Image (cartoon, rainbow, N blue to C red; front, side, top):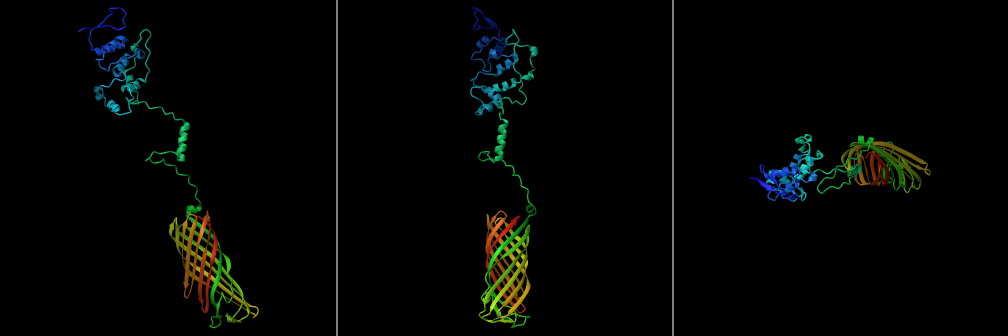
Length: 435
């Protein structure tokens, strides 16, 4: 059945185009649009035609009719609602349209897909004299209509990264300084380990060296009995503190120790000197000599102590250490009594060696520390006890300490007897390396 339409804009009255509807009417509109008959295609596009058919403006036409036809079949006017059949046939479109924020308002879903496909080659200009039509010999193959490699249909083109070299350097500096803010619940960026300083020989070998100098202010008290030749009755017990008038004295002491891991060895030199001068209130018998009462007597008692020790560290914690060890004490006693009034002068001396058992410990808190040491030895009917306690403060490798020391000896050698108590405060300065 033929159909007759009047083209809008025709000036000659009675200008009529007759077209037989051999093909479907939508295809007829496409052909008229491709041929440049914009007015006819617009008049032949009533509301009852399918919404997927749309015109292509003349200024947007290319020289490739197949491209225009594809655009007409896929483009819709902005604002036209998508048909249910289109959404159901394209799952990707359906999912993206249902996701909020993926499609800008008033835009068509298929437009980015086709635009990304046609960006591979710009539209060609139509030859002169034939607007809207191109040379079929210059048409690209059909594969040019496919999306470019790496382009996902319907995906939005990512924005170009506009970070400059200065921005990247600034980000690296922030990462190194740790100034990058992290979102709640996320771990901060891992910081590179600090450069390790070159270790000393003490750290590599776990070696320690301790050098100490101390000044002990002590007083001597006790008794002694000195015989001659081991014969009883050739000596009497003398109160050295009262009868001889010995005065408190102070002498330096030296100690050193070296540590390798949990093992430590060291020594200490403790020279004890006591001198006095007094007038006797009663006679004294010393080394088979009797010093009469009222005579002026000068006395000198020297007691030199050398000690060596080996310790093992039982506990090693940041808060303190505990050591347990063995050692030995060597001591030499030398005494002299002189009286110019009586014309008497006597001298007696002897030595002895004591095995010893010792323990020591230290507690630390910051630069402050407290420590104690207990040592003692027993040999037949003689023994000794050495006690000390003190506190210290540390600056780097130096430690300043002070405390109190008590040293008691009870020695019996044949018929000779010594019972001495040395006690008093001390102050010391230590150089500690590798502690």
